[in-house]
Picture 1 (cartoon, rainbow, N blue to C red):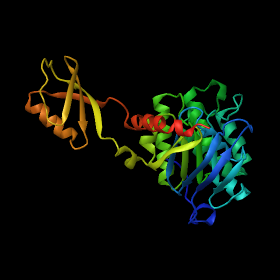
Picture 2 (picture 1 turned 120 degrees about the vertical axis):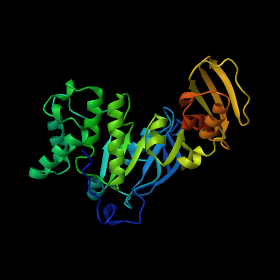
Picture 3 (picture 1 turned 90 degrees about the vertical axis):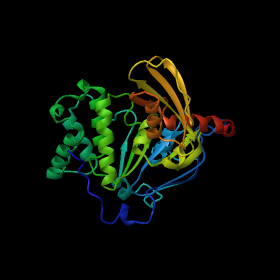
Picture 4 (picture 1 turned 90 degrees about the horizontal axis):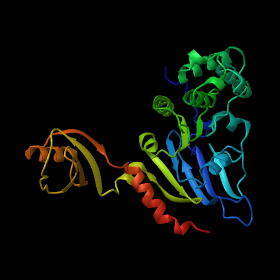
Length: 325
């Protein structure tokens, strides 16, 4: 069941040219004598993209999302959603929020939770019933719809949490760690639903600790460290900075002596496993061909380390001392 979300013909609030989200020079202090949680932070998110916010614990990601949702006020700076600088009723109708901790009532059923939050968004009667049924299908929890949520698994709670944020068909969706600590099937389902929302024209801003999740979903990202932007770029451009990659290869049969291959550095892990470091001037197919010429057949291959993770660690390490206050 795909996501039932129909893009507005006039764009976000009729402001087709305006970015979905504009954060300009935002400063947030919780105490006057404490370092700022956000420090002169600026981000622009165009309409219709999936934009990732990455950073270590305490970087300021949740603080930023709380400001965007109107739960916190910035100490300085400005925030605009779809060209609006205040959370008017119109802006609230186009905004969906999926918090890190599931915002659901455990003693209600899944259906009752959706009905409650749908009414909070102004839905009534047949329209409410239609959206509840659609969301149950989107989350694939129809078989649990009339069961109390306190008996749901963690993955089902996350799925319900997601569709509660979708009940009113928002045009901007803000998610804080939407797949934190859930099973692979639920994570895959949520990823698929986010891709479908993106295809329908919904703007999605998400924070995540799972760097492979950002690499899978997002084209554009910002990395935050200690309340400041450490990097803001497209993922393809960021990943292009990698000059080498290391792969782990499982081989068919034992290899007692490794050949010398130009452009590839081979190291044995055990008799049937090797690590290969290769620069960007060479390809996987070239590696396979070179190994085959030396009588070595590859059964499987994987990256030794997630590419984005390597860059993230380098960026945070490089910008860390500059971010101290």
